[in-house]
Length: 425
Image (cartoon, rainbow, N blue to C red; front, top):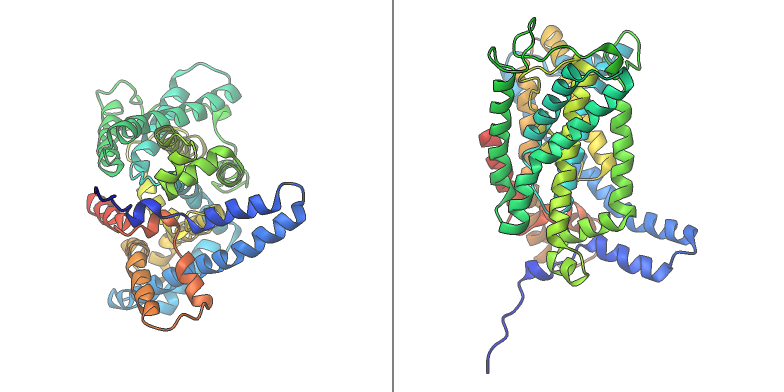
């Protein structure tokens, strides 16, 4: 008698929260919105608490570990903390600059998170951001359109360019099974080289007055400044709108449900009639489009033209932002503010506390390292819990819900990919 091949644990695993949402929705129906709201709030309260605790512990441990390094660098830890707070939140101008630094991280973090929810690791957000900014800069400098129309076309062009840059990895992943980490990393370097060529001294779009940049975009086609006397522009409003749209699409639309179902369990998604290949392609295109918008916002709101190497690594930092925010829209916004605070306060840290700007990069790297270490820590906690009698307490629930399903994969793909990303950065 032929033995039936047992199904692997990975293939039958179902996202706990997604399953709870399905069963809750079936039980409540659609008529009693109060009961539905209370049920959802009660079901998600534990998850929110666990994610908040995960965020606070990760940031706290990273800051704690960085303290000896700060003292070794010759700076005073208390003075450095005070300088960081004052330099990033101590005045209206400092708050505005923190929000300016947080805006591209927030939009790029949404791009990374969207792909993650579909079970994809889009490590090419940096390249898609660069291409989106490049497209916006070229369109703004060359198309003879009136101000508002040119602004809209530049934004759409940036989004389309970012999506187009993600198309090849998406098709290779969906129809040939090529790992998106490899292809998106390669596309990053193609984007960097393309950018350098187009605005090089012999490039077709280089400015006559500014090396390694395109011509300036007319003021009427730029995003307006929303706080006079600062650099804070309307890109922040676009980022907030995208956060709301991201949450609505992910949790309130059939596409979002199919996206999360594909990321949680592809076999279940196929059984439910979801086109996994189509979902993978759409997720990558939307992710690339968001990254392109992040680049276009920087060009249209901050610089007024495209500069080669304008990005200090927003796309790479966005991976840490998305993971630190547990892929949730509000969490990503808080994580973007945290990294924006570090970037904004770096100058004040150097001037007041004598701490080098590179130390801020060390702290950011420690946050990434501790985020990457979360699967191993949770595995140790689960092993510790398995050796003691089950009690069903808050700690058990926190361990179960601290990481979203794609990050809790047993093969620890996230940790390996993060390590690969850091080595290629």
